[in-house]
Amino acid sequence: MRLEADHKTNVELYPLFSSIAAATDLINRVLVDHHKKVSFVAATVGRTLGLEEHSLGRLTLAASVHDIGGLSIKTRLETFEFEVINPDRHTLPGYSLLAGFAPFADLARLIRFHHVHWQNGQGLRDRGEDVPLLSHLIHLSDRIAVQLDPNREILSQKTEIVQQIKAGAGEMFVPEQVEAFQEVADKEAFWLDLTSPSVSTIIQNRFPLAGMELDRGELMALAEMFRRVIDFRSRFTATHSSGVAAVAVALAEYGGFQKNNPDRLRIAGLLHDIGKLVVPLEIIEKHQGLTSEDFAFIYKHPYFSAKILCGIKGFEDIGQWCALHHERLDGTGYPYRKAGEEIPQGARILAVADTFTALMEDRPYRCGGSSSGTGRIMQDLADYQKLDKDLVALLQENTGEINDRRYEAQVGADQIHGQFIEQCRLLDNCPEAADRCPVKRM
Ligand SMILES: [Fe+2]
Ligand SMILES: [Fe+2]
Ligand SMILES: [Fe+2]
Image 1 (cartoon, rainbow, N blue to C red):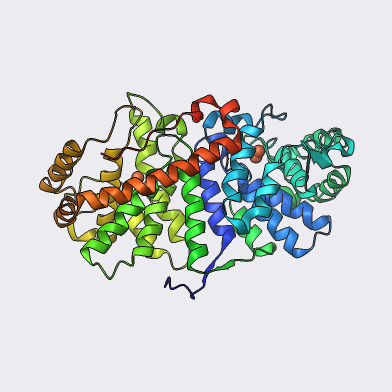
Image 2 (cartoon, protein in one colour):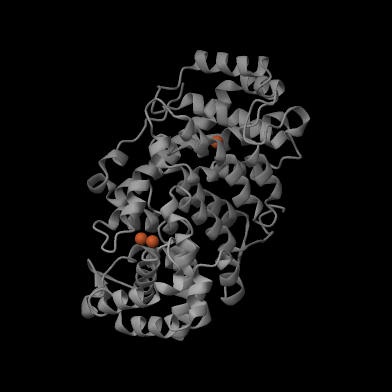
C-alpha cells in the first residue's frame, strides 16, 4: 500500500466494521455475535421490504456497528433488556464517533435513532429531528436478536419470538416492517442462517457491501475516527494513541527510517490498541489489584489488533507491528513471546512510542509525567533489553522536541474528546466519563 496523495486505497468496509464490532462483542459472553445477528436480520428484512441496493448496503453496515457507542459492559448489557431505559448512553456516543468521518454521516444518523419507538407514527420524529425508517428497522432487528436464547434449539424459539415482535407492532415497531419480518421468519433457513457460525460470510455473499476508495487524507481521517472509538472509552486513554502516533512518526523522522513510511507508522500508532475493544472498560479503569482474570483480558489485545488490521488489504505490515507492540527484545513480552530479530523495526518503534507516551500519562493507579523519572525508566528498559537501545537513544537525544510533538498531539486530541463529551451529553448521563485527564507536558 502506498500513501501518496493521489493514490487511492480500496477499503472493504464490512469486514472491517464486522471485525471491530465482533471485538466489542467479546467483552461478555451474552453479547457474542450480537452485531452480526442484527445486521443479518436487518439486511434480510430490508430486502423483503424491497429496499434498493445502496440503502440495503448502508443499512447492513450501520447495523453491523450499531452498539459501538456502548462503552462499558454495564451499558452493553442494558441494551439487552427488551425495553432499553436510557438508550442515549450508547446511541449518542455511537452517533458522535461515526459522524466524525464525513462519509459515514448517514450511518451515524441510522445509529443515533436505533432505539426510538414507532409510537404509531410519532416515531418519525425524535426531539425535533427526522428519524430514518431504517433506524426503526435496526431497532426491530435488534429486539429480535436480543431474544435469541443460545441454550435452546433455535427452531423451537421461532413462534415465541414472532409473537413477541407482533405484539409490539404499532407501539414499538413499524407494522410494515413487522409484516416483512413475519414473511422472513416463516422460513426455517432464516433462523439457521441467523445462528450459523458463518453468518458473516453469508452476509458478505448475499448483500451489496461496497468498499470505499479513499485517498491519503481520507484514509488518515478514517484511522483517526477509529482511534476515537478505541481511546474515548476511558478518560485515561482518551488521547493515548494520538501521542503514540506522534512519537512513532517523530522517531522515524529523526532516525531517517525510509523503509517505515511515517504515514504507515502514524496509522499504526493510531490503531495499535484497537484490540483493546475486547478488554472490558471496567478492567481498563480499575484502580488497583488487577486479577489474573483481568490480565487474561489484557494479554489478548495485541492479538485482536492483528486480527482486525491484518484483515484489511494492504495493512498487513501495519497489523504485524500492532500485533507485536507489547513484545520485548528479551522474549518476555506478550502474546507471541517473540524476541530479538523476530521483532521488526516498526513494532520496536511502536513499543518505544507506546511506553514513553504511557509513562507521561495518568493511569487509574498512578500519576504520570515526570521528565527525569520517564527518562530513567526508558533507559532501564533499554539496558535490560526490553526496548530497542538505539531507538531509546534517539528518543533521549531528541527528547525535548519529540515530547513537544507528543504533547501537542495529545492536547489536540483532548480538545476533540471534550467536544465528544459535550455532544454525547455524557456530562448529564455518565458523570464518570465527564472528567478528563489533564495532558502533561513533563
Ligand atoms: Fe442498541
Ligand atoms: Fe444491539
Ligand atoms: Fe497496547
